[in-house]
Image (cartoon, rainbow, N blue to C red; front, side):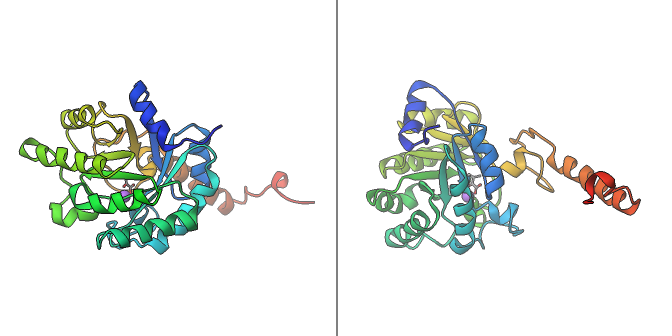
Length: 265
Ligand code: KIV
Ligand code: NA
């Protein structure tokens, strides 16, 4: 299958075809999601929570994400692979942002980068795009600024809508090919989507956006602890793995595994 490219995102929005994305952090899931026809794979800094065991995404570094991104980019044949720029790797200004984006592009095989922030990240996005690197924006709830935002709070409600719209316009003006809207009311996301030319990708943003993205460990029921209320659990991988592990443990303890069938002679 032909590689999904950023221009296909625009075409999808223009034709009213929904875009699908999942996070991925390794070769196995990347292969499965890619073969299932998911349009883009985001190697999110959510790896901090889902892979590295941190409480937030704040400690995640470029050096930690590079090998994960390389694994995903190496496995995906069709899906567009997007490298997430971690906290502290672009806030310092456009040159720092470009340097980080260049590292991901040269060292991983990803085809685009993502960074958080609307108006505040305008110049960073513009600089990266001017170097020929596609950028996905990310506004609404931005986990890297959870302390500044005062926790996991829905963004763009009431009076805050105007700021959300300004952020959306800034990201588009800077040249981003798409923008993630995270944890915003469905009607606000619908208005932003109608206002912008570029596609919007919703994460807890209701149905009236150009596409949907979920953290794969949440959507597949692998995550331990609480998951956001907008996540639909499409599988119970945690239950399935727990059952498999318990059966293995019991069968070994009981001398059932390995029997004749699983032994060399
Ligand atoms: O890191 C991540 O997984 C993300 C998405 C949830 C938007 O940034
Ligand atoms: Na992220």
